[in-house]
Image (cartoon, rainbow, N blue to C red; front, side, top):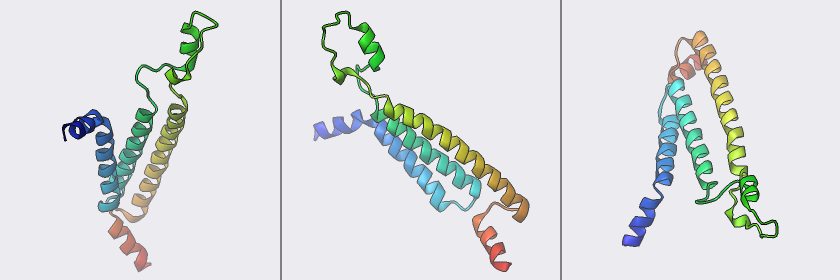
Length: 132
């Protein structure tokens, strides 16, 4: 029992990401205000990005160029197990750009919706659309 508890506590960052994802998911599903839905979407995306960055790290690992430059002996075999794979981090940089641009376009659409319907509440917008 103690092993399970210490194992769960050791992975506290993953629990934090799960909590952030659930907050974002709750905001997207339960809230009627479009801005609150957008902020929930942004929180959800941030939690996913943090999760992928954290699983891409390795304790004591270095990037391949530093590992290669620090090995003094050319004949010394370089252990690829000490490398940190940079691919998850590079992909998450792309995801950050996509997240920011998605949020910007969604905010621009929310401004247009507000100018047209004078509200950002989803149920009121849908009621006005049904009246047309």
